[in-house]
Structure formats: structure tokens, C-alpha cells
Length: 312
Image (cartoon, rainbow, N blue to C red; front, side, top):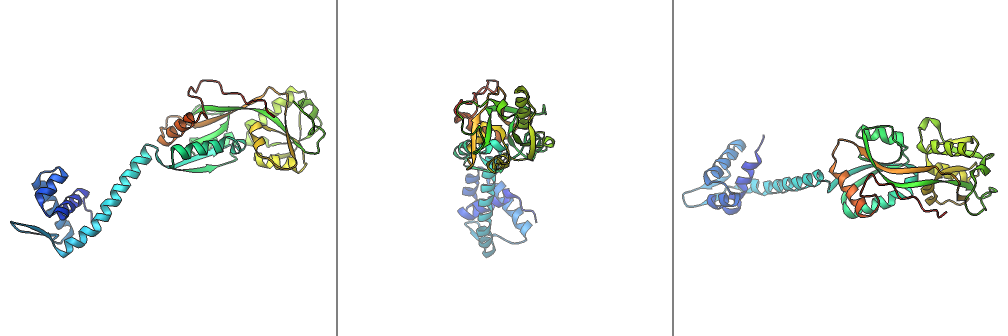
């Protein structure tokens, strides 16, 4: 049985006022329209809801029961409408977020705090340790709303704004001869070291930057161990299995047995917030506004990112 909401609202207004005229005023309708709606509802239900006389209106027992239950339904419909509008303008719902490994330890906490402050009714659904190619596919396939990834991307169908520029730093086992030094480490000192890197098949932007940096320093790294996660890279360094070049933000992942040192490479890694072009998502717009408000991304997407300070 399909009951029209307008009939239900007319009946409840009459049930609350026990007067067709006052119900019509409450609903901003003509009285005959209210009377007609209630009659149609009674016909649909097959029961009399009201007792009508020339002087009064009262509820039948069936009408009283129906009114009690219908009030809960209309309240839920109102709540559903509010929730739908909140989701439509990005104030509630779910934000599906992909994050590259190194950003998990630096940018993600700041993003989450900003989102929680500006969008308290939006829940984050986070997938971490996602490399750029994987995030690109997920964004274009509508599996993610936003990605925090390393540039460049391979798709013209993504929009992005740069949020940080990382330098490369060396992650060294605590017992490595270069671990105890100070200042900038000449990358050439690691020419004979065993490197832990991402696998070629991953298409990692960081891997390309690492190989280019080593080439700039005059050597090809000896790659003995391949990984798919930044956290695993640092863990293997801590185990003494080799050295690694990682984005500076990965230094936030502190493990006993690992020392981070800046290296003399001009290579930089841009970290960007990315989303699918041409798909307006209010929740994405609100996130970008929140990050702007917290100075986590520039107002002008074309402005160069702020370089990471030389603090290590």
C-alpha cells in the first residue's frame, strides 16, 4: 500500500487540532484540500480515521492508533530530509581518503584534525600506504573521493593542489658508518651500500626520485630488498638490512635503530591533494576549505609549495 506523505500530513494536522479549518491554516492549504486528502487516506487504508459531525471532529480508535504510529514515521522522514541535505552540501556523510605511506605520519594527522573541526559529522574512511598509481585508479574509478599522493600523476582527469614539498633523506641503520655524522650527507658516500627500495612494478614516484638522485651522485644503487610500504622500508632499515632514501616526512616514523640524515640531492617530492576532475563533491569542497582555513594548503593552487625547512 502506497500512502502519500501529503495525505499523512493532512491527517496528522487534523488529528492534532481536531479541526479542519485550523489544520488547513497550519498547513497553508485550503480546507477542502485537507478534507479531500484525509478522505483519500481513509479509502487507501480501508478504515475510518475520524468521526465527523457538523459541530466537531474526533478520532476513531483506529485513527488514534494510526496517528500515534504515523507521528514517528513523519519524524523519521523529517530527519531523513535533514540528513540528505547535510550530505548533499558536504556537512555529513563519508569521505573516502587515500594516503601515500610517508604522508601517513606527517600530513594525515593535520588533515584529520582540520576535518574533525570543520566537518564533525563527516566520517573518514582512510586507506593508507597507497602509491600514486593505485590512488589514481581508485579516484578515477570512484573508489576514493580524495587522494594524498606524490606528483606527478599520469592522468589529465585529476585535479590537484600541492600541499608540501619534501626533500629526500637517508634512513640509516644506527650502526652504519655514516649514521653518526652531522650536517648534510654526501649521497656518494652510500654508493657501496645495500638499498631498500620500492619495487619497479609499483610505479612509485619515490622510487623514480631515488634512482634519479643516485644517478646524479654518480652511481646506481644496489637494490637487495624491495617493499611496497614506507613503514616496511623504515622497519627493514632498523633491522640492519640496508639503507634507504625516503621523503623527509617519513622521518616522523621513529623506530629504534634508525637514523635520518639529509642528503645533498636537489631532488624534491611534491605532496598533493588530488580528486577526480568534473565530479563536484561537496564533501571534497568542504575539506579543501577546511585545509585552507588551517593553512595546510595554499589559497592559490598555482602558487609554489613552501619548501621543507632544512632541519634534520
